[in-house]
Image (cartoon, rainbow, N blue to C red; front, side):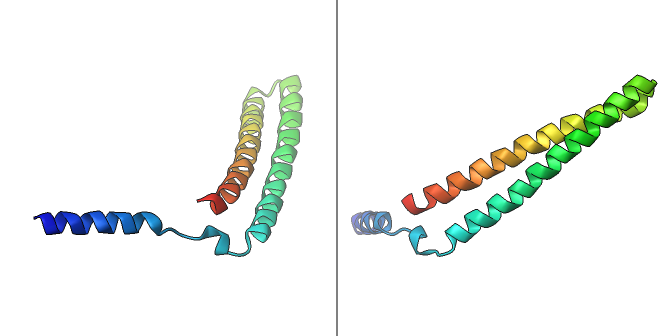
Length: 103
C-alpha cells in the first residue's frame, strides 16, 4: 500500500510540471484579425437592422398598424441584443487570445 501511495505522489509531482505550450501555436494574430472583421460585420448588420426596425416602428405607429408596430419593436430589441452579444463576443475572444500565452 505504501509503494502505491509513493508512486501516486511522484506522478502528481510530474503531472504538475507538464502543461501545454499555447505560445507555440502560431496564427493568433491572424485569428484576432479574422474574428475582429467578422464581428465588425455583425455589428454593422445589427445597426442596419436597428435603423430599419425603428423606421418601420415609427411609420407603423403613426399609421395605426399596431401589429406591424409590435413586430418592428421586437426587431429593435433583437437588433440591440444582437449588437450587445456581438460586442461581448469580441471582448471574450480578445480575452481568450490574451490569456492563452499565460496558461
